[in-house]
Image 1: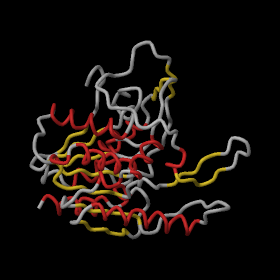
Image 2 (image 1 turned 45 degrees about the vertical axis):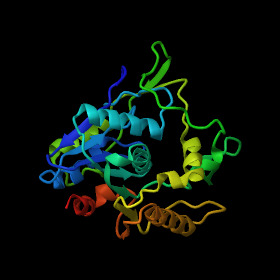
Image 3 (image 1 turned 90 degrees about the vertical axis):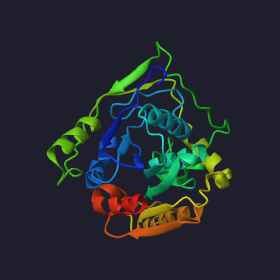
Image 4 (image 1 turned 135 degrees about the horizontal axis):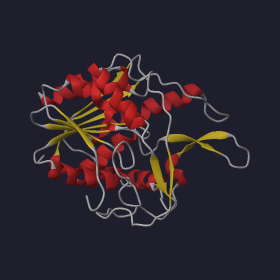
Length: 291
């Protein structure tokens, strides 16, 4: 991939191919319970994000559109030439939408699993007071725009800061096959290295998506939106927990407006990680598009 490697897990066989994008701070192996359910139905490919799992960081400016660009090149290398079903969780949902924007003719269907939204909010720390508050991420954009995609990896000789996380995955892998649980644990605890010059353009990308939302309209491409109906949040002085939950559910539901052939399904009794809490139900939503 231009001097860097993109790692993927592959399971099953059959057309169309299902392509998975995980959320921030995760790894491709988190999709394994869903992939196991569909192993006899379809070829499935789950990518590790750049710098996550066994994937190299890739170009210096890691963006959603870079991930989509790299995924398409990797699929071509893997001889996946026909239409694909895109499945994205959280931030990975935005990668799926970016893939569909760039490569619309490649997309058979899209499944968004508690996906992020251009108007999403996150908690940010005030460096002066040390207090956290909820803000719409895109309002923090730099105005520099989104860096172009590249097929060239990190330049050599960059100073990097590395650390090895110590993450306990026991609460995630309960009931998993032992080999799948071991793979996720390994992926979650690999050394992570970040060059000092790395720039995130996430807020700028969300601003672009919000300003150009019609570019992401899927037309008649089938779309299923799964979202956690009752998420729990830590509120602040401005936003109560219930208000944040209502806003999150509203944003998730409005993603269905991107397609004229869409279903929006509120999921009960699950957390943000719907694919971990209810892999059979996520697999069933994907299987509808396989059939």
